[in-house]
Length: 416
Image (cartoon, rainbow, N blue to C red; front, side, top):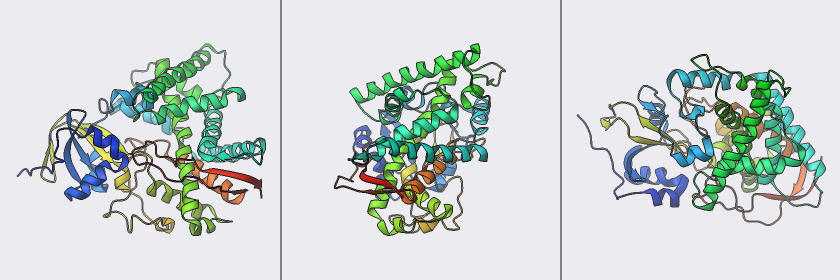
């Protein structure tokens, strides 16, 4: 027996998505009292899902595909064309293995060391009376970290310009007008930048450590045994540089959390790695980062008595799943201790998407994100003292990515 799927009535909800942003699916899930409903977005029927059970369905690769799910405006800015996010089957497994091979313990130790080094360098070079916006500072620091770790040459004189270019890739996909076209131009320029290095590596004119991503990706072979096109290599290198730079969004939210919850911040002084990680995991759960993940149904099937037709656009609510009342106790409360002894599944905590790391679509860089955030938090709490001037800490839920309006300003900083 097939049930009628709850429906978000109305001709088209594209403007509502733009207006409500991160809260679009969550608002309708609550009003319809359902973790699944159908609506219309950009003129086509779409199914929206939220919660861990729906996430488990969404990451079932026998039922969903990714290759034609992302809007072209997102591919032309955020993901790039030909990257791992849009692949399925053997091609996805091959490419994901290339990325996951980088994520060992030695790499995490190196990234942690680089984060601490470049934050120290940043504040040593900045004047102590200068007001620093943590969000903008983190873009510069994290691009330096990412370039050093991947083997991408980065001149000091070009760092701020490149950081702005890379951040345009994740600040523009949901934007309209000039901001979107700025992102498309940044994608083209960034691709050209990295493609030049790929050509040099293959020609033997650029000396890169053979353990670095720039080298291994340049010589990686696909399922047919052929070298990846240089354009695809550039996209995958940027699939490391871009999300590592985008962790700057969460640095802003770390600053916001320490301001909004000073009692939790006080617990971090002299704290060990475990408590620092509880705090950053709660930041990742509590504050918005990615709003949705997109896929298309690959076959006709039924779930919970609802019919899913092949080819239907399907959106999984990442922000809402991390606040779902069936999965979280007091989800509206900022409570880092909730992660003490907590058991994560591939579907109940999905700030960067869910599923399996090795063969599924879960973000390969999630380990990197955690290390970068934890090291940054450790530095801000235990290595630096600073003042927080009056400013606007509010942010808009229809601004993607959401960042406090004044980007979390600090001044009068000094080393402990």
